[in-house]
Image 1 (tube, rainbow, N blue to C red):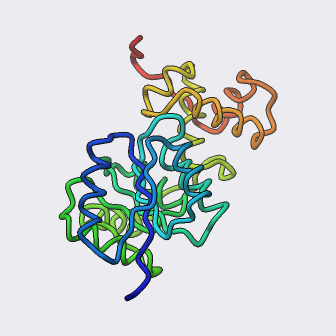
Image 2 (image 1 turned 90 degrees about the vertical axis):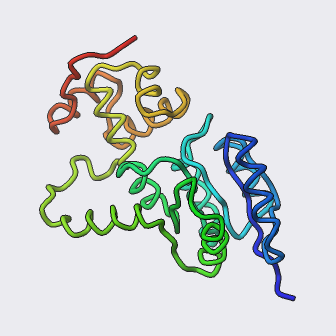
Image 3 (image 1 turned 45 degrees about the vertical axis):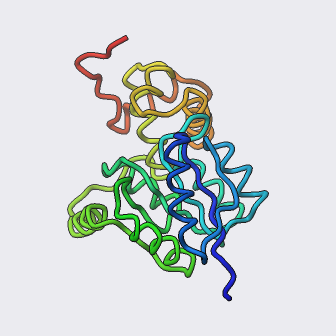
Length: 222
């Protein structure tokens, strides 16, 4: 009998984790070795358990799935991260890909396809749901018509944060806008200061506006 694929499930909804565990248990060639309820726990348990595959939700407390994916793969690049989320917007898809995810499925994907995707990424392949694959095709088909991103030393998420900082939003408002924790926002802001070699928020805003970021919104709620 072949060695089972060892899987860690990272999702902040216990009912969904339970359903996913039950689904994977139907395949004798898959073993769920741990469950994580947030991004920090996903990083810690992955380091401890060394699974073959991490099934990663994107929007979780303490550390979002993109940051968790990046940190996991920096430490253990042999681990395959398969995103399983309800978000199919361009920012989420490409942020996950840049972080190193090998696959991207939407919650609601056919159960058999989820099982197949786990085996595919564990074997070194890639797996994308139909809607996500279409977005990627459209993105690369028009790649040559897009201008180069400003501040290439920043990640896409860091540019998003910088843009909102330059609009005058607080860390709390940025956290709500991007559906991430305030602690994650603070980490991004610190990284931005380091990468742009600025000392404070004011200098960061000046650099951002010089680069064309920070167009104020028409209204920002409380």
